[in-house]
Length: 424
Image 1 (cartoon, rainbow, N blue to C red):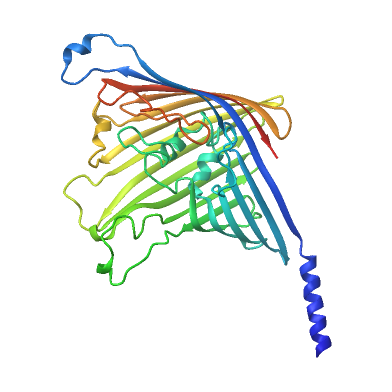
Image 2 (image 1 turned 120 degrees about the horizontal axis):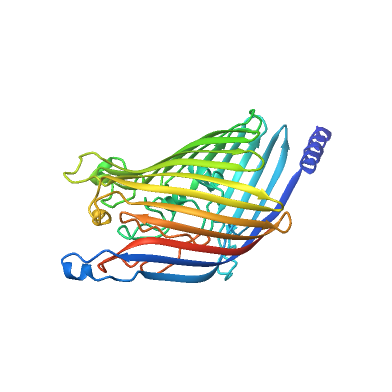
């Protein structure tokens, strides 16, 4: 009996020793010099018609800065797998964002991705932790400029950048969605990679809220029951020169159990690309909706609104370099404006819109190192006041545009990136 136990222990030890493990450290260091300038034009001051006949010069705010992530997001990460045999493995991925221009942000938090996975060659992957949401991937993959730098798609800016002047707030986009790019506390499933070009992802993220039973014991406090919850999915096909994918995501951004209110942000998008060799074409259409559900509908506007957007772009290899060009456009539609948002419609009574043109060139010095330059121009319309991103963030001008009570409105913004990227 003892010999049998010893033999089994030896076999188990040999199995553990033979399991294949890997650990990889990786990262990107990307630094750019960036210039941003906003322009506001004079439209007149209500109640003072005499002043409106006097010509007034445009007003500007501008900023030179050194920043990270002009071409690719700067990061430092660790990933690894352990082969358990039979086509099954365990994997982990820890990735931290960096601001290498000042060194202020680094490994203090793995805020970009922190996941552990169960991988099977036949079943797919189950992934737990903080990860990209499905709808983000179409914004990123089907744009020549991805989601970084001054050339980032206007659709991405609408969902992730600072809100317009009339909404206030920063860094959660016009729709105030903390799950627009990533979701914490998530369970994700990915289809196996050998399905003839088909791929897919599904995700559910917990809000980790305390539930009360019976319901009338729920505290009278906002955003305690459902806010933070996310559910979404993506399905696509990529084979040869074609890649196409559709995605859907729904995030609860606000709720009040005692008022019978739930606020959902629903995002749907469809993206595609076709690589002809001499040129690669990109396209995306997108809709994001803010929907309020009430048990007892209020007598005033429910605060529902939506943003529709599209992108058309191309990349063209030139020797060791790559030319990038894109046009993206968004239009907002306030179907039932809530209190505090009607100011954005005051100038013309029309729905705000913005169109963005971006062009750039990447010169590859090696497989890992590149120089790049990008220019972008955004034309505002009907009260829109979008800003251009600087790296992964946005310039902290006092007001971004001279608009409030000044007789001016946002007219346009332009930006430039000059940088170097090294990956390892």
